[in-house]
Length: 212
Image (cartoon, rainbow, N blue to C red; front, side):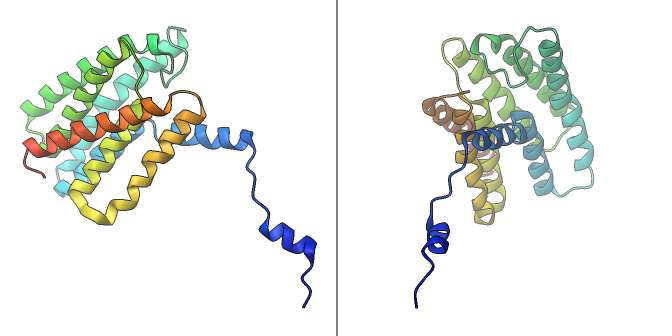
C-alpha cells in the first residue's frame, strides 16, 4: 500500500522550537524555580517529614522571617534602580543583597533555635545561611548559580527524607541549569558549581545531624 509522502514527511519531520519560545520557557522556569520559591518548597518538604501539628506555625514563621523580608528588600532595590532585576543577574550588584540575606538567615536561625523549632526546620535555615555566605564569597571574584544551588539542595533534602520515590525530582536540576544558560545568566561551569555547592551543603548538614 502506497503511503502518502506528504503525510509521511509531516509525521517524521523534526519538530523545531523557535528561539522565542525557548526563551519564554527559560524565563518561566527561572521564575517558577527561583531560590525564594525553592526555599518555600524546602521548608514545606521538611514540614511534611516532621508530621506534627505545630509544624504549620514553624513554616509560617520561617516564611515570614526568611522569605518575605529578602523579597521585599530586593524589590525595593529594583524599584530604586540599585539592582537591575529581581534575580540579581549582574555580579557586582549581588554582594550587598547576599550579605544582608546571609545575616538575616543567620539571625532567623538563632531566633528559631531559641524558640525550639524542629531540627529539620533548623537544617533548612542553616543550609540557606551557609549557601548564601559561600555565594557571597564566590561573588567577590566570580559568579555562581543561586538557582542551581537552591534546587540541588531541595532535591538532596527530598531524597534524604523520602527516598527513591522522589527520584524524578532530580530532573528539575538540568532543567533549571538549561534555563539559566539559555538566558545567558550563567555559564555551564557556573551552574555546575551551584549544583556542587547545593549538594555539599545540605548533605553535610544532614550527615552531621544524623539524618543520613
